[in-house]
Image (cartoon, rainbow over all chains, first blue to last red; front, top):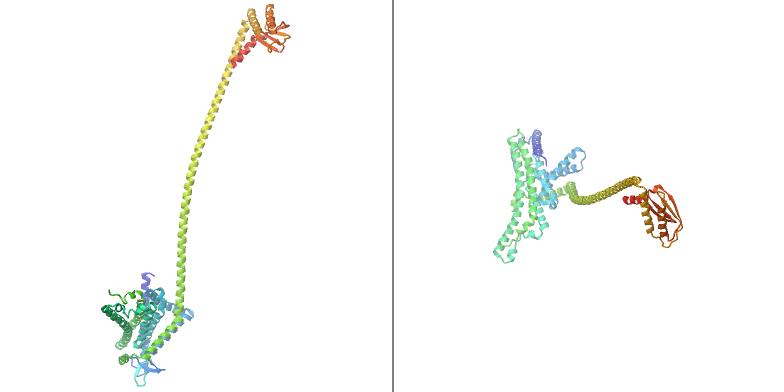
Length: 306
Length: 247
């Protein structure tokens, strides 16, 4: 589809948009910081380098600790819903353009999911995969807005924390996504293969046949399979957490080192890395789900050692 | 372990909050975006399948039409070949018939021509014969006209009287009444007596005889007895000869 010239033009257009966005974000951040430093004496133009892994607890709402990352996540959620709602129901050419862009994004995700999972399973996995992708990318991009950083909240103990912080830097958010991905994988596998999937973890066929040594190895292999599932969950969690946190730290350091020279490339890098991380998380979820649903895996579970 | 998790910021309530947030987002986006998108995709797939089916049916129909066309062409070619063969055979038969007919006509024409030729030949021969006999009779008449003297007349009359005397009546015994004699020259008494004697012998008794002359007879005499006529004249004999020469 399309010629080589068309695809290179498209790539140049995307790079151009990315660059302009990065420039706009960096400029907006600098302007916001200058304004805040001018208006409020305790806000420094050049931010202090202070990295806290746990998110800042702002207040408690019905027993739920509302942190700056959770607030940011809600903001990202509202923006996502608003974006798609306007794309669906908004009148006029501007909203038609948003609708076209939203359709393009959904089309790309759908094609990828159907390409991996097939036309039968793909539509079932698509909503979860698309939500994971959009959630990660929106949470990462919204963290690049100028309000993230300069606007701080004073806590009860007198300390100050940013009012908003990228939800990707909160381990609870990435762990939640990893749990959701794990639930999708396991439920898809159970729905597709039922008890034969459980035989992947509980391998007692050899033992029942009287092969003690082989049965013990099979049993241990089943336990390892279970541990693999757990570590996959941890891998999902900390990959995304590490990438988002490192990106935030990179922006802070870049802003500290070059306060007057706009850290444009880093914003561009963050924009691009957000897409990459979201895509990796979504792709791994779909691939693991398809792998778990695949009947070829049944041959590996409880293999006879004869 | 719980302290360790707490140190890195894992909090059960926050975890639940994020899970709930994700589920709410999933639900909202499903109704706003995913469901219409999937519906559109299914409709597009159905249309694509229908288009594929239609194109497959069209391809099958086209192949069937091509096969039918080829069969029809083959049948038409076979029919044409058969028609050509039949036409060729009919042509050959017709040619043979025409040739035979032509030959027959030619033979008939030849036969007719031959018959015509033979007819013409016969006619020519008859004409020649007639002309020849006429010439012969004419010459004979001329010769006779010059060569017949009285003595010759007498001999002829005598010969003729003997011929009459040798005749027989039909039916025998019939009664004769009168005899008329026509001679080329006037009869002498002897000659008359011979003739009367011959008549009497023929009639069985003497009967009256009437005589007259007729130079057209050239020689000899004719005898008419009731309805019986005897031609013993030279003219009569020349006419017999003429008739025989003519055939």
